[in-house]
Amino acid sequence: MCVLHIDTTNNQEITVSLNGDSKMQLKEKAHILKSQALLPLIEKLLKKNKIELKDLSEIKVNRGPGSYTGIRIGLAVANALGYALGIRVNGKEMETDGVYEWPLRQSMDYGLKTKDLRLKTKD
Image (cartoon, rainbow, N blue to C red; front, side, top):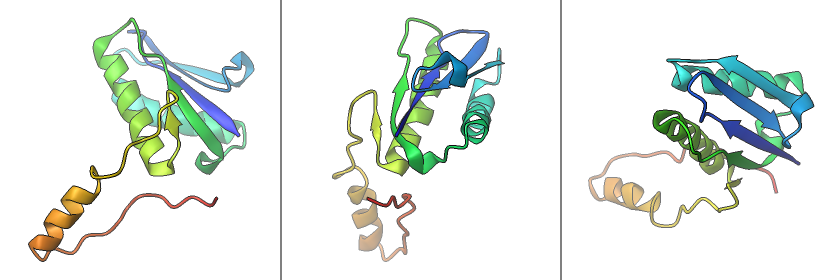
């Protein structure tokens, strides 16, 4: 299994790597649009190494010090991917009990139709 490393602390660039290996690392200049550059960079890294999202076992994010907005972008993307894939982010399980169920129950109370959009992973 692979560990995805995300570093958005630098004001000038984004770095993503697999298993902390510098041979499996991509960097991209992203002074302003980090939020728009991070996911395509992750996709490019995975394709280059013939790895699919479902093959990731964990995501690690550099939490600083560094650019506040950059760190928030890295953590937001990592948490979203971790939640969707059901994998750990920085060694922590994504808590879904109650967080996801409350809006679902709330919408049922109002008769709204909802759909579970979380990705299903094979065990």
